[in-house]
Image (cartoon, rainbow, N blue to C red; front, side, top):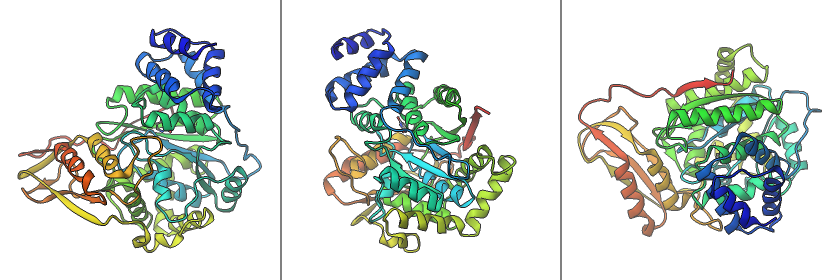
Length: 436
Ligand code: URA
């Protein structure tokens, strides 16, 4: 079998067999197929799509590229949540401790930044000492000790996704429903979970800009999960503006801590409660989503979720004192405001450009080998629908490198649409729920 023939067939919209897809996944995971050939094949998939059979085979091949975990000896139900990615989306940092504090087990395998969207692993690594590369034995120990553990794909679990994910990040091959589905579901199905809540973003800051594309992706993932015997629900949620008021790795940890302490921006808090509620419901912890929401709010109000976050950080080698003193997180040396060019209302944002601005500042990768700057990012002072006066700050840039500032600033300036009258409609936070 020759890789070049498989690339050509997909380029010409042909179908690959099980053996061929398994050959590609195994060969790339073992380092026998070079990045340039895999990148060409991924681009062909992005442009030409896959059949349902090809997608099922790709997901299974990626899932079985490593071990699948079995936590059936641990007494509580195992649930997880995964987002398709957006700007300022730090819900995992809040939800994981909330749900673990509420009595379920959360074995979470997350990803790094992808394209313009941030990644849970990069955010966690902005906490000094936090180790996302636990061995399987350590993962199990942390999970059974405190009810939650957060790691990345490793050489042992979902290694194919680890490599393909990093390649897609820097080759513009993210926005494919098939590749997103295989990436997410291969990791999640390896976790030994009973149930999964998917947060499928839609809007200008999402990979699926149009709602119908987000619904299509949600249905693909729900179908894949159910075929493998899992309870899966997908919430289609809004990403037409950043979630919360901060984007950038350590800034997002700071904002997640605000929510865990009972504060934080309304949209972020609300979405965290909603997603946690579905996890409680699917995990059989509560009789319904409304009760789940109450339980999630209680975990925050009583401080149990915040205590749980401290415990997770400590068990994974991090500085748990950041929860009480966020000044211990990395901070950028410089800040500068981006002022509004006019009086009026924020009518909308080109949210993807705000995410790209974070990458340009050094918060994401442009090449696979790039290291990231955990401290840089953006603080948003106005949400869609808010009034603003000319010269007032729309956003503050946190940066370390002058050379990157001008490009980021231009992206941000072009991202905000200011209009004289208040927008008549605001988009809902949760557009719809798929799969129940
Ligand atoms: N999250 C993932 O894990 N993979 C994707 O492809 C997109 C979001």
